[in-house]
Image (cartoon, rainbow, N blue to C red):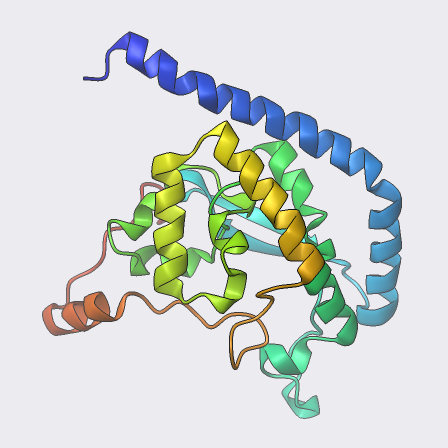
Length: 231
């Protein structure tokens, strides 16, 4: 039963997590400011403007926010053969992705409250209706700059496994778990593990759980969308 006392106990860890997110994000933005400037100059010289990549992503409860990262790809240009992610990803872009330097501007999303330092990664808004009801529970918390799936294999994992880890995190989240994920993230970045999926420059599109997609095609049913996901 969700008594006022129980609800208050649930809010306390969330308030602590949010406070730590704001503090750490603010400190990191200050400390990495020189590096951010250097990366911005390199991106402007190598990829042109704009320097930042902005894209709508699904956040907590399916609410849409604008994710901010450094650009790593050239714009699509079929005349020059730049169509797929692999065609558009530059050497600089690969380096930024492998070292996660492209994620530095995302600390601004953490400071704003769109994201947390640790949580399920923010995915494309078009994925919202493709989740099963269980998979959609990943949106019960703020998305993270890093997460359990990122330290368990990153893009080398299949979608089913990644989403299962996201939901496991939601059910078992704690400050201790967050700290262990942050520590493991440092090791993963230094080793440059799981940067891309097999046969893909980044990660393949999530098309939904195969069994659910088949069932939906046969019955013309729709999957459950998290609250706010249709905005």
